[in-house]
Image (cartoon, rainbow, N blue to C red; front, side, top):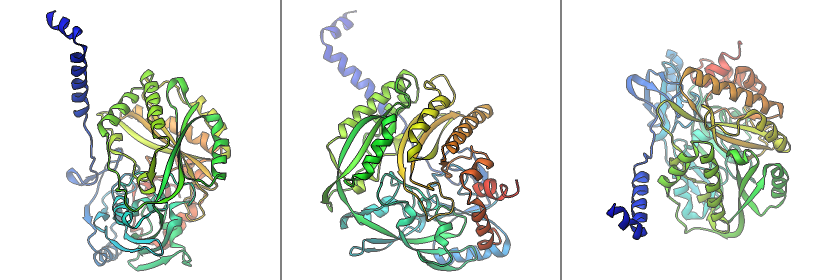
Amino acid sequence: MQTITKMTKRPWVLWVLVVVFLSLILWNIPIEKRKYGLSQSNLVTDYTGLLPERVERVMEATNRSDLQDIIKEANEKGYKISLAGLQHSQGGHTYYKDGVVLDMRSLDKILEIDEKNKTIRVEAGASWEEVQQAITPYGLALKVTQSQSIFTIGGSLSVNAHGRDIRFGPMAGTVKEMTLLTPTGEIITVTRDDSKEWMKYVFGGYGLFGIILDVTLELTENEVYAIQTEEVKTKEYEDYFKRLMDDDKTAMHYARVSVAPETFLEEMYVINYDITGEIDKDTPLKKEEGIRISKFALDIGRKGGKLEDLFWETQGHYIDSLDGSTITRNNVMRSESTFMEYTTPGRVEVLQEFFVPVNSYEEYLQDLKKLLSSNDSKEDFKVHNITVRYAAKDEVTTLNYATEDMLGLVILIQHGLKKDEIEGAKKIIQDWTDLTLKHRGTYYLPYYRYQTKEQFKESYPAWEEFYREKSQRDPNEVFQNLFYDYYLKEGSTS
């Protein structure tokens, strides 16, 4: 009793103990750095671990000549090849049963930087982090990439990724030239005016049309942006975004939608990056900071209910704190990612992404409110985050998710790993996909295969052209993966 009395008389002692206690909790939160690929007995998986498969072997891609020999041998002997970078895709795109996985990460050289013409030639196994390290001293930056720098160039182009830029269009449109190892073992140089249209099938082709050896990318200046943040209602966002696009002062933009029960799908925070006219050559690339605190906050939000409301309010305070600050273009394109990793036994977090035409956004969100539970704290299927990004009309690739100017909703979802839990999640996501199709939308293909084959075909009507070209350009079906086997190879006969 005397100890408690002394502490109440000295409240600072209690506060010190609370701070120490919370510090210990934060320090002991595991910060995962996941490794994928080969494990016991040649068992391979990717980000979610939902589609494990045994492969014949994993081989490191050491040089072009050896790769060429491997492809020619595969044609002769009939074995199958899959391509893997950092394996952040989630639907078996980087491996195939009893096949050979080529680990492309060793082909990571920066081959040439042309400061005058603002281009870089880089091997496909390099990460965006490595590219940014190379170009920042020149005052140059990427035109289009994902919001994190942890992926490989070849991987991002193979999934036709997009990011926060709202002015330069799709990532595939920033490639001036490509060196490709074809399925028949030829090494060719491909430009935009290539009469055989290789880029049309390789970009967004999920490693099925050959090996990207290197690419020449268009760059832009490493501009300095002023961050502008705002809270808007979801019913106002469609008009807000159209005004934003008409005002060319904003170079990059994204938004977050509330999934908290009190404001479910009704509130949004928008983050804009406005041009200041300054070019930066001196600011270093930022490192990940505050990982444990960010993970602690996210883990609170993962509980749902009132804690999700608290997490949304906390996000709002953080976003408000950014207003008026400045940041370089390269640093916008390297958001923190480690804090999002999730390794709770018996559960999995997955991504889904749905695209709807800009003019359909408000009505789409209204219909989505009828489909999803506003409070999922007691449910197995939980939605943790919805980020909105712009995807300009894509006229480059065949499996094209942006048939017109679209808004993409990137969804972070959690569910259990029991059979009935996976089936329950699949049912909700298939209903969500039907709703998206009703609004003339599509879904993104790099994620786990919840969608039916019929939904795939409706979302990607050019799948038959893709399959036909695959058959012609890779007659021995050397390049294979689980995604192709399920949606295209089997889908062509179902």
